[in-house]
Amino acid sequence: MLERIHLAVVQEVEKQGSLTAAANVLCVTQSALSHSMKKLEQQLGTDIWLREGRNLRLTQAGEYLLAVANRVLPQLNQAEERLRQFAQGERGALRIGMECHPCYQWLLKVASPYLAAWPDVDVDVKQKFQFGGIGALFGYEIDLLVTPDPLYKPGLKFVPVFDYEQVLVVAGGHKLAKEEYVKPQQLTNEILITYPVATDRLDIYNQFLMPAGVTPKRHKTIETTDIMLQMVAQRARRGSLAALAGGGIRRQA
Image 1 (cartoon, helix red, strand yellow):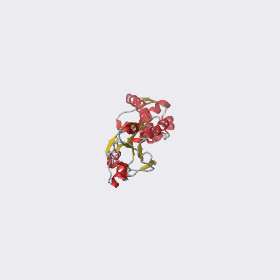
Image 2 (image 1 turned 90 degrees about the vertical axis):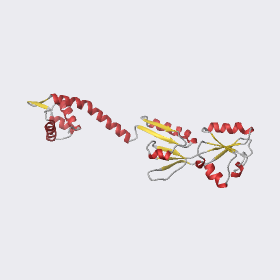
Image 3 (image 1 turned 180 degrees about the horizontal axis):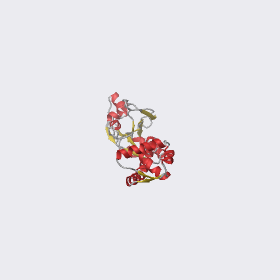
């Protein structure tokens, strides 16, 4: 019954002083404006204006409607502008799921210029490395997922961000340090440190060790790359220790 145009008409008539001037501002004909307001008065069962010669005077109902227009119209205008900003990506929150341990530093470098370009957008990074990232995407818990494990399903789009390679890190004095390349069997008696990811998602296992039927002497997990490397260096004299570093990502767009 009561529409936005009715509020705009009441507000503009008060500002402009006449239906004709208000019609010009609102880009409608005077007859269309008059018909619309007359129909509203009939629906409401009360007059909005009283005519005094060529002038219009708001009734008590009209005064109330003007107060509503002055309060509501700016809010609607602001809401439309905010929704436009959401639609254009100028405002809102970007929720990123992170399943790639070594990619966090890369993300920091990418996020900095993004935040500078879009100051009204918040970025939230969820570092649940073993969570169901794909499920979170389908559940709208996150907007994009940084993962080394592409899963091609309808409704998902994977965009390669950069290439990567598996890197085996050993202490400088380790017997494998001078090897040009390493074979799976050479890790049989080694302690292997990886990120805390299920072994079936680790390339060192499913693409290197398991096809050869090899398992390391011991498997440890550490979340931070820097600590992992320090452990490799410090444990050099107390036993063989190898650490896997490396990782790759795909971005869900």
